[in-house]
Amino acid sequence: MTRRRTRTIEKFALLASLYVSQYIPVMFLFEALPVFMRQQGIALDAIGLVPLLGLPLTFKFLWSPLIDNYGYTRWGHYRFWIIFFQLLVAITTVICAEFEIQNYLTITMVGTFCLFLFCSSQDIAADALAVGLLEPKERGMGNGVQTAGNYLGSLIGGGGMLLLLDRWGWKPTMLVMAGTMIFALLPVLRYREPPAQEDRSPQALEQARGSFLTVCTSYWKTLTSFFRRPRMWRWLTTIVLYTMSGLMAATMFRPLLVDLGLSLSEIGLIRGIVGYTAGMFGAIAAGLLMTRLGRKRSLLLFGLLEVVTLLGYLIPAAGIAYRPMLYSIAIAIQFTSSMASTALFTLMMDRSQAATAGTDYTVQTSVAFMGSLGAAAFSGIIAEAIGYQGLFLASVGIGLINLTIVAKVLDDPPLSQSSVVT
Image 1: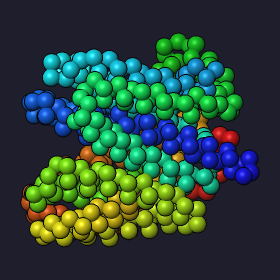
Image 2 (image 1 turned 90 degrees about the vertical axis):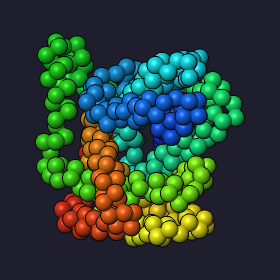
Image 3 (image 1 turned 120 degrees about the vertical axis):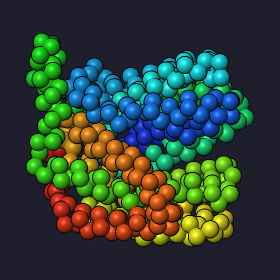
Protein backbone atom coordinates (compact mmCIF):
# COMPACT_ATOMS: atom_id res chain seq x y z
CA MET A 1 0.00 0.00 0.00
CA THR A 2 1.45 3.36 -1.02
CA ARG A 3 2.08 6.10 1.50
CA ARG A 4 -0.42 8.38 -0.25
CA ARG A 5 -3.15 5.76 -0.05
CA THR A 6 -2.38 5.16 3.60
CA ARG A 7 -2.74 8.90 4.30
CA THR A 8 -6.08 8.95 2.49
CA ILE A 9 -7.39 6.04 4.55
CA GLU A 10 -6.22 7.78 7.72
CA LYS A 11 -8.09 10.94 6.67
CA PHE A 12 -11.31 9.01 6.12
CA ALA A 13 -10.90 7.16 9.43
CA LEU A 14 -10.48 10.49 11.22
CA LEU A 15 -13.60 11.92 9.53
CA ALA A 16 -15.60 8.82 10.39
CA SER A 17 -14.65 9.03 14.07
CA LEU A 18 -15.50 12.74 14.20
CA TYR A 19 -18.97 12.43 12.72
CA VAL A 20 -19.93 9.19 14.45
CA SER A 21 -19.06 10.63 17.86
CA GLN A 22 -20.72 13.94 17.03
CA TYR A 23 -24.07 12.37 16.12
CA ILE A 24 -24.29 9.92 19.03
CA PRO A 25 -25.28 12.53 21.68
CA VAL A 26 -27.35 14.61 19.24
CA MET A 27 -29.50 11.68 18.11
CA PHE A 28 -29.69 10.39 21.68
CA LEU A 29 -31.25 13.70 22.67
CA PHE A 30 -33.60 13.86 19.68
CA GLU A 31 -34.63 10.20 19.42
CA ALA A 32 -34.00 8.26 22.63
CA LEU A 33 -34.44 10.90 25.35
CA PRO A 34 -38.09 11.84 24.57
CA VAL A 35 -39.09 8.16 24.56
CA PHE A 36 -37.34 7.52 27.89
CA MET A 37 -38.83 10.68 29.41
CA ARG A 38 -42.33 9.51 28.53
CA GLN A 39 -41.60 6.07 29.96
CA GLN A 40 -40.60 7.77 33.22
CA GLY A 41 -43.92 9.61 33.36
CA ILE A 42 -42.65 13.05 32.30
CA ALA A 43 -45.41 15.35 31.01
CA LEU A 44 -45.76 15.88 27.28
CA ASP A 45 -45.27 19.65 27.54
CA ALA A 46 -41.83 19.07 29.08
CA ILE A 47 -40.94 16.50 26.42
CA GLY A 48 -41.95 19.00 23.76
CA LEU A 49 -39.22 21.36 24.97
CA VAL A 50 -36.41 18.97 23.95
CA PRO A 51 -36.36 20.01 20.25
CA LEU A 52 -36.47 23.65 21.36
CA LEU A 53 -33.32 23.08 23.41
CA GLY A 54 -31.64 22.08 20.15
CA LEU A 55 -31.74 25.64 18.79
CA PRO A 56 -27.92 25.93 18.96
CA LEU A 57 -27.84 23.54 15.99
CA THR A 58 -29.71 26.16 13.96
CA PHE A 59 -27.94 29.30 15.14
CA LYS A 60 -24.39 27.97 15.52
CA PHE A 61 -23.27 30.16 12.61
CA LEU A 62 -23.50 33.12 15.00
CA TRP A 63 -20.38 32.02 16.92
CA SER A 64 -18.60 30.20 14.09
CA PRO A 65 -16.37 33.28 13.33
CA LEU A 66 -14.96 33.04 16.86
CA ILE A 67 -13.92 29.43 16.27
CA ASP A 68 -12.42 30.41 12.90
CA ASN A 69 -10.41 33.32 14.28
CA TYR A 70 -9.32 32.22 17.76
CA GLY A 71 -7.97 29.08 19.36
CA TYR A 72 -5.01 27.43 21.09
CA THR A 73 -2.94 26.85 17.96
CA ARG A 74 -0.24 24.77 19.67
CA TRP A 75 -2.71 21.86 19.60
CA GLY A 76 -3.81 22.66 16.05
CA HIS A 77 -6.39 25.38 15.52
CA TYR A 78 -9.52 23.33 14.82
CA ARG A 79 -8.16 20.22 16.55
CA PHE A 80 -8.04 22.20 19.80
CA TRP A 81 -11.72 23.13 19.54
CA ILE A 82 -12.76 19.55 18.69
CA ILE A 83 -10.93 18.13 21.72
CA PHE A 84 -12.20 20.93 23.98
CA PHE A 85 -15.88 20.58 23.09
CA GLN A 86 -15.86 16.78 22.99
CA LEU A 87 -14.40 16.69 26.49
CA LEU A 88 -17.13 19.11 27.60
CA VAL A 89 -19.74 16.77 26.10
CA ALA A 90 -18.28 13.81 28.02
CA ILE A 91 -18.07 15.77 31.30
CA THR A 92 -21.63 17.09 30.95
CA THR A 93 -22.89 13.58 30.22
CA VAL A 94 -21.20 12.25 33.38
CA ILE A 95 -22.77 15.04 35.43
CA CYS A 96 -26.23 14.32 33.99
CA ALA A 97 -25.77 10.64 34.85
CA GLU A 98 -25.78 11.52 38.55
CA PHE A 99 -29.28 13.03 38.41
CA GLU A 100 -32.25 10.74 37.81
CA ILE A 101 -34.42 12.39 35.22
CA GLN A 102 -37.76 11.94 37.00
CA ASN A 103 -36.46 13.69 40.13
CA TYR A 104 -34.20 16.33 38.58
CA LEU A 105 -35.95 17.35 35.37
CA THR A 106 -34.70 20.95 35.42
CA ILE A 107 -31.07 19.86 35.77
CA THR A 108 -31.58 17.38 32.93
CA MET A 109 -33.01 20.10 30.70
CA VAL A 110 -30.07 22.42 31.44
CA GLY A 111 -27.68 19.58 30.72
CA THR A 112 -29.51 18.83 27.46
CA PHE A 113 -29.13 22.43 26.31
CA CYS A 114 -25.42 22.36 27.16
CA LEU A 115 -24.97 19.13 25.20
CA PHE A 116 -26.65 20.65 22.16
CA LEU A 117 -24.48 23.77 22.51
CA PHE A 118 -21.21 21.84 22.81
CA CYS A 119 -22.08 19.38 20.02
CA SER A 120 -23.04 22.18 17.61
CA SER A 121 -19.81 24.05 18.43
CA GLN A 122 -17.74 20.94 17.89
CA ASP A 123 -19.51 20.50 14.54
CA ILE A 124 -18.21 23.90 13.40
CA ALA A 125 -14.62 22.88 14.07
CA ALA A 126 -15.07 19.37 12.61
CA ASP A 127 -16.52 20.73 9.36
CA ALA A 128 -13.74 23.29 9.09
CA LEU A 129 -11.11 20.62 9.69
CA ALA A 130 -12.70 18.45 7.00
CA VAL A 131 -12.59 21.29 4.45
CA GLY A 132 -8.85 21.69 4.95
CA LEU A 133 -8.17 17.98 5.31
CA LEU A 134 -9.62 16.83 1.98
CA GLU A 135 -8.24 17.63 -1.43
CA PRO A 136 -10.93 18.54 -4.00
CA LYS A 137 -10.81 15.13 -5.66
CA GLU A 138 -11.23 13.44 -2.24
CA ARG A 139 -14.28 15.42 -1.22
CA GLY A 140 -16.86 13.19 -2.87
CA MET A 141 -15.66 10.10 -1.04
CA GLY A 142 -14.85 12.14 2.05
CA ASN A 143 -18.41 13.42 2.29
CA GLY A 144 -19.65 9.89 1.68
CA VAL A 145 -17.65 8.78 4.73
CA GLN A 146 -18.96 11.81 6.65
CA THR A 147 -22.59 11.06 5.83
CA ALA A 148 -22.13 7.37 6.61
CA GLY A 149 -20.60 8.39 9.94
CA ASN A 150 -23.65 10.55 10.63
CA TYR A 151 -25.94 7.58 10.03
CA LEU A 152 -23.85 5.23 12.16
CA GLY A 153 -23.81 7.79 14.97
CA SER A 154 -27.57 8.18 14.61
CA LEU A 155 -28.02 4.41 14.77
CA ILE A 156 -25.92 4.17 17.94
CA GLY A 157 -27.30 7.28 19.63
CA GLY A 158 -30.93 6.86 18.63
CA GLY A 159 -31.40 3.08 18.60
CA GLY A 160 -28.51 1.61 20.55
CA MET A 161 -28.72 3.97 23.52
CA LEU A 162 -32.49 3.47 23.73
CA LEU A 163 -31.91 -0.27 24.07
CA LEU A 164 -29.38 0.39 26.84
CA LEU A 165 -31.82 2.70 28.61
CA ASP A 166 -34.44 -0.05 28.52
CA ARG A 167 -32.06 -2.69 29.88
CA TRP A 168 -29.62 -0.82 32.12
CA GLY A 169 -31.34 2.42 33.08
CA TRP A 170 -30.28 6.06 33.07
CA LYS A 171 -26.90 6.23 34.85
CA PRO A 172 -25.13 3.26 33.18
CA THR A 173 -26.33 4.38 29.75
CA MET A 174 -25.08 7.93 30.24
CA LEU A 175 -21.71 6.67 31.47
CA VAL A 176 -21.41 4.40 28.44
CA MET A 177 -22.12 7.36 26.17
CA ALA A 178 -19.52 9.49 27.96
CA GLY A 179 -16.96 6.70 27.63
CA THR A 180 -17.75 6.39 23.94
CA MET A 181 -17.07 10.09 23.45
CA ILE A 182 -13.70 9.77 25.20
CA PHE A 183 -12.75 6.70 23.17
CA ALA A 184 -13.71 8.48 19.93
CA LEU A 185 -11.10 11.16 20.70
CA LEU A 186 -8.21 8.76 20.08
CA PRO A 187 -7.97 9.37 16.29
CA VAL A 188 -8.14 13.14 16.91
CA LEU A 189 -5.40 12.96 19.55
CA ARG A 190 -3.17 11.06 17.11
CA TYR A 191 -3.79 13.57 14.31
CA ARG A 192 -1.45 16.50 13.80
CA GLU A 193 -3.04 19.45 12.09
CA PRO A 194 -0.82 20.77 9.26
CA PRO A 195 1.19 23.94 10.00
CA ALA A 196 -0.75 25.84 7.32
CA GLN A 197 -3.82 25.55 9.54
CA GLU A 198 -2.04 25.79 12.86
CA ASP A 199 -0.28 29.02 11.97
CA ARG A 200 -3.11 31.52 11.93
CA SER A 201 -2.10 34.72 10.24
CA PRO A 202 -0.30 37.52 12.10
CA GLN A 203 -3.40 39.60 11.46
CA ALA A 204 -5.50 37.09 13.41
CA LEU A 205 -3.01 37.11 16.28
CA GLU A 206 -3.08 40.90 16.33
CA GLN A 207 -6.87 40.86 16.38
CA ALA A 208 -6.79 38.44 19.31
CA ARG A 209 -4.83 40.99 21.31
CA GLY A 210 -6.75 43.97 19.98
CA SER A 211 -9.47 46.09 21.45
CA PHE A 212 -13.06 44.97 21.86
CA LEU A 213 -13.99 47.05 18.82
CA THR A 214 -11.30 45.30 16.75
CA VAL A 215 -12.60 41.89 17.81
CA CYS A 216 -16.19 42.85 16.96
CA THR A 217 -15.13 44.19 13.57
CA SER A 218 -13.23 41.00 12.83
CA TYR A 219 -16.23 38.91 13.89
CA TRP A 220 -18.66 40.84 11.68
CA LYS A 221 -16.32 40.77 8.69
CA THR A 222 -15.87 37.00 8.94
CA LEU A 223 -19.59 36.38 9.38
CA THR A 224 -20.70 38.52 6.44
CA SER A 225 -17.89 37.78 3.97
CA PHE A 226 -19.59 34.57 2.82
CA PHE A 227 -22.78 36.39 1.85
CA ARG A 228 -20.88 38.99 -0.19
CA ARG A 229 -19.40 36.46 -2.59
CA PRO A 230 -20.79 36.36 -6.14
CA ARG A 231 -24.00 34.31 -6.62
CA MET A 232 -23.92 33.09 -3.01
CA TRP A 233 -27.56 33.97 -2.30
CA ARG A 234 -28.53 31.94 -5.35
CA TRP A 235 -26.59 28.99 -3.97
CA LEU A 236 -28.28 29.26 -0.56
CA THR A 237 -31.64 29.24 -2.32
CA THR A 238 -30.51 26.12 -4.18
CA ILE A 239 -29.79 24.40 -0.86
CA VAL A 240 -33.30 25.08 0.41
CA LEU A 241 -34.97 23.97 -2.83
CA TYR A 242 -32.90 20.82 -3.08
CA THR A 243 -33.77 19.52 0.40
CA MET A 244 -37.41 20.56 0.52
CA SER A 245 -39.42 17.73 -1.09
CA GLY A 246 -37.63 14.81 0.57
CA LEU A 247 -37.99 16.34 4.04
CA MET A 248 -41.69 17.10 3.50
CA ALA A 249 -42.39 13.47 2.65
CA ALA A 250 -40.12 11.95 5.29
CA THR A 251 -41.69 14.03 8.07
CA MET A 252 -45.12 12.52 7.43
CA PHE A 253 -43.93 8.94 6.92
CA ARG A 254 -43.57 8.29 10.66
CA PRO A 255 -47.13 9.35 11.64
CA LEU A 256 -48.38 7.38 8.63
CA LEU A 257 -46.75 4.25 10.08
CA VAL A 258 -48.47 4.96 13.40
CA ASP A 259 -51.82 5.28 11.63
CA LEU A 260 -51.18 1.93 9.91
CA GLY A 261 -50.95 0.30 13.36
CA LEU A 262 -47.22 -0.33 13.64
CA SER A 263 -45.73 -0.49 17.12
CA LEU A 264 -43.02 1.90 18.30
CA SER A 265 -40.42 -0.87 18.13
CA GLU A 266 -41.42 -1.68 14.53
CA ILE A 267 -41.20 1.98 13.54
CA GLY A 268 -37.83 2.26 15.24
CA LEU A 269 -36.56 -0.78 13.37
CA ILE A 270 -37.83 0.42 9.99
CA ARG A 271 -36.91 4.08 10.33
CA GLY A 272 -33.88 3.69 12.55
CA ILE A 273 -31.89 0.49 12.30
CA VAL A 274 -32.80 -0.56 8.75
CA GLY A 275 -33.15 2.97 7.36
CA TYR A 276 -29.90 4.29 8.85
CA THR A 277 -27.99 1.22 7.68
CA ALA A 278 -29.25 1.76 4.13
CA GLY A 279 -28.21 5.41 4.45
CA MET A 280 -24.65 4.40 5.31
CA PHE A 281 -24.37 2.29 2.17
CA GLY A 282 -25.97 5.05 0.08
CA ALA A 283 -23.42 7.58 1.28
CA ILE A 284 -20.48 5.34 0.41
CA ALA A 285 -21.99 4.57 -3.02
CA ALA A 286 -22.42 8.30 -3.70
CA GLY A 287 -18.84 9.00 -2.69
CA LEU A 288 -17.55 6.39 -5.12
CA LEU A 289 -19.77 7.59 -7.99
CA MET A 290 -19.11 11.31 -7.63
CA THR A 291 -15.53 10.99 -8.81
CA ARG A 292 -16.74 9.73 -12.19
CA LEU A 293 -19.96 11.71 -12.54
CA GLY A 294 -18.78 15.12 -11.35
CA ARG A 295 -20.41 17.52 -8.88
CA LYS A 296 -23.40 18.96 -10.73
CA ARG A 297 -24.38 15.77 -12.51
CA SER A 298 -24.22 13.83 -9.23
CA LEU A 299 -26.33 16.40 -7.42
CA LEU A 300 -29.05 16.29 -10.07
CA LEU A 301 -28.97 12.51 -10.64
CA PHE A 302 -29.03 11.61 -6.96
CA GLY A 303 -31.74 14.20 -6.34
CA LEU A 304 -33.83 12.72 -9.15
CA LEU A 305 -33.41 9.21 -7.74
CA GLU A 306 -34.60 10.46 -4.37
CA VAL A 307 -37.68 12.12 -5.88
CA VAL A 308 -38.58 8.98 -7.86
CA THR A 309 -38.31 6.73 -4.80
CA LEU A 310 -40.68 9.07 -2.94
CA LEU A 311 -43.43 7.56 -5.08
CA GLY A 312 -43.02 4.45 -2.92
CA TYR A 313 -44.73 6.32 -0.07
CA LEU A 314 -47.97 6.16 -2.05
CA ILE A 315 -48.25 2.42 -1.34
CA PRO A 316 -48.54 2.66 2.48
CA ALA A 317 -50.55 5.86 2.02
CA ALA A 318 -53.14 3.67 0.25
CA GLY A 319 -53.46 1.64 3.46
CA ILE A 320 -51.16 -1.25 2.53
CA ALA A 321 -49.03 -2.25 5.53
CA TYR A 322 -47.24 -5.34 4.20
CA ARG A 323 -44.07 -5.38 6.30
CA PRO A 324 -41.49 -6.48 3.65
CA MET A 325 -42.85 -3.76 1.38
CA LEU A 326 -42.47 -1.12 4.10
CA TYR A 327 -38.88 -2.19 4.71
CA SER A 328 -38.14 -2.04 0.98
CA ILE A 329 -39.55 1.48 0.71
CA ALA A 330 -37.58 2.68 3.74
CA ILE A 331 -34.36 1.17 2.36
CA ALA A 332 -34.79 2.67 -1.13
CA ILE A 333 -35.70 6.14 0.09
CA GLN A 334 -33.01 6.33 2.76
CA PHE A 335 -30.40 5.01 0.32
CA THR A 336 -31.16 7.66 -2.32
CA SER A 337 -31.66 10.42 0.24
CA SER A 338 -28.21 9.70 1.63
CA MET A 339 -26.73 9.87 -1.87
CA ALA A 340 -28.36 13.26 -2.44
CA SER A 341 -27.10 14.57 0.91
CA THR A 342 -23.55 13.44 0.14
CA ALA A 343 -23.56 15.34 -3.15
CA LEU A 344 -24.96 18.46 -1.49
CA PHE A 345 -22.39 18.38 1.33
CA THR A 346 -19.59 18.07 -1.22
CA LEU A 347 -20.70 21.20 -3.06
CA MET A 348 -21.02 22.99 0.28
CA MET A 349 -17.41 22.10 0.99
CA ASP A 350 -16.33 23.40 -2.44
CA ARG A 351 -17.81 26.78 -1.50
CA SER A 352 -15.94 27.00 1.81
CA GLN A 353 -12.62 28.82 1.98
CA ALA A 354 -9.88 27.49 4.22
CA ALA A 355 -9.38 30.69 6.22
CA THR A 356 -13.07 30.86 7.22
CA ALA A 357 -14.06 27.22 6.71
CA GLY A 358 -15.98 26.96 9.97
CA THR A 359 -18.18 29.95 9.21
CA ASP A 360 -18.65 29.19 5.50
CA TYR A 361 -19.73 25.58 5.95
CA THR A 362 -21.79 26.29 9.06
CA VAL A 363 -23.79 29.05 7.36
CA GLN A 364 -24.74 26.59 4.62
CA THR A 365 -25.73 23.80 7.01
CA SER A 366 -27.75 26.27 9.10
CA VAL A 367 -29.63 27.40 6.02
CA ALA A 368 -30.33 23.76 5.14
CA PHE A 369 -31.57 23.09 8.69
CA MET A 370 -33.83 26.15 8.68
CA GLY A 371 -35.24 25.05 5.34
CA SER A 372 -35.91 21.58 6.74
CA LEU A 373 -37.83 23.04 9.66
CA GLY A 374 -40.03 25.02 7.28
CA ALA A 375 -40.60 21.99 5.04
CA ALA A 376 -41.51 19.86 8.05
CA ALA A 377 -44.00 22.45 9.29
CA PHE A 378 -45.71 22.79 5.90
CA SER A 379 -45.85 19.02 5.44
CA GLY A 380 -48.28 18.69 8.34
CA ILE A 381 -50.49 21.49 7.03
CA ILE A 382 -50.56 19.98 3.52
CA ALA A 383 -51.22 16.44 4.79
CA GLU A 384 -54.06 17.70 6.96
CA ALA A 385 -55.62 19.44 3.98
CA ILE A 386 -55.22 16.85 1.19
CA GLY A 387 -54.21 13.64 2.96
CA TYR A 388 -51.06 11.51 2.89
CA GLN A 389 -51.33 10.58 -0.77
CA GLY A 390 -51.85 14.20 -1.77
CA LEU A 391 -48.81 15.23 0.26
CA PHE A 392 -46.55 12.61 -1.26
CA LEU A 393 -47.67 13.48 -4.80
CA ALA A 394 -47.11 17.17 -4.02
CA SER A 395 -43.61 16.33 -2.68
CA VAL A 396 -42.73 14.54 -5.92
CA GLY A 397 -44.04 17.44 -8.01
CA ILE A 398 -42.22 20.03 -5.92
CA GLY A 399 -39.05 17.94 -6.12
CA LEU A 400 -39.15 17.78 -9.92
CA ILE A 401 -39.79 21.52 -10.20
CA ASN A 402 -36.98 22.30 -7.77
CA LEU A 403 -34.52 20.05 -9.61
CA THR A 404 -35.38 21.84 -12.85
CA ILE A 405 -34.63 25.18 -11.20
CA VAL A 406 -31.41 23.84 -9.66
CA ALA A 407 -30.25 22.53 -13.04
CA LYS A 408 -30.62 26.01 -14.56
CA VAL A 409 -29.11 28.13 -11.81
CA LEU A 410 -26.42 25.87 -10.33
CA ASP A 411 -22.82 26.69 -11.08
CA ASP A 412 -20.27 23.87 -11.00
CA PRO A 413 -17.21 25.76 -9.72
CA PRO A 414 -13.71 24.74 -10.80
CA LEU A 415 -11.90 22.61 -8.23
CA SER A 416 -8.98 24.90 -7.53
CA GLN A 417 -6.63 24.53 -4.60
CA SER A 418 -7.49 28.01 -3.35
CA SER A 419 -9.87 26.70 -0.75
CA VAL A 420 -7.71 23.81 0.37
CA VAL A 421 -5.12 23.53 3.08
CA THR A 422 -2.58 20.83 2.28
